[in-house]
Length: 70
Image (cartoon, rainbow, N blue to C red):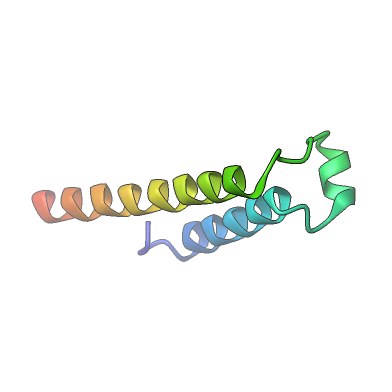
């Protein structure tokens, strides 16, 4: 994941776009994708926490597989 520069920047861009959608930074994008606003800030924080957790788990699995197969 981190050895591939394009994939790394794509993941960063996806995280920024998703964060923008979650926090309603741009109403035009939210309307384009027909997204409804999240009910409260606690739910927003939960979603962001899960996104970061998913990234950490993917990196950990990649690191372990790389160590096992080198």
